[in-house]
Length: 251
Image 1 (cartoon, rainbow, N blue to C red):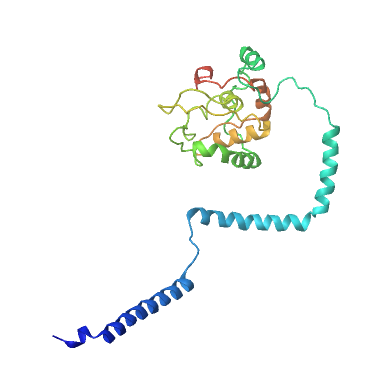
Image 2 (cartoon, rainbow, N blue to C red; image 1 turned 180 degrees about the vertical axis):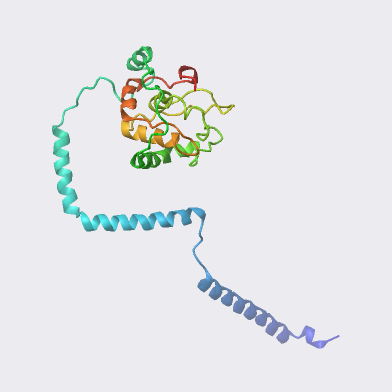
């Protein structure tokens, strides 16, 4: 038997050598971790970084062009104007509470004659590029459901090669002003968006005409432009319940 095995001095020395070795490795690991560590980056952090950079640029530009004193002065002026203003009565509010007397009255109103709006128009008439640009900007909202390229989605029908898009103009205007409820068949496939499409009547006549002109002449579609006066002629539809496919003119 090796006599060194029962030597208490050797045992004591070995123990402290082991502790020392462990301590040295722990210190090395801590040093490496301290200098090599980096802040965790998630997809949310990566997406937020350019937003923060843009916000910083906007804040700097605003601070350079508009001082805090100017903002305070303008706030006082606007506050006084608002305090002195009086509400103006309107005949047809842009927003109508569902189930209210106004909503029932609008729903019972006779349908607007759309024959003049849907009269055949030349499809070879040049489209104003400014109108297309306005429509493209407004389409960002529509693209959330219909796809930015008009390809459609799981619940919203496609706008590309849609008979409703290139069909009667009044259909699109009424859908824009009232929203759409219930199933609708597009290119042979039925779509039924839960809750239906919300009305976008808050947009101006020019904005609605622009976005409808854009979808009628994009994604492979080709149809006549929609005019602001055509939208204005159907403004009386605002506030009525969401339109259904049965109420629309068959394309």
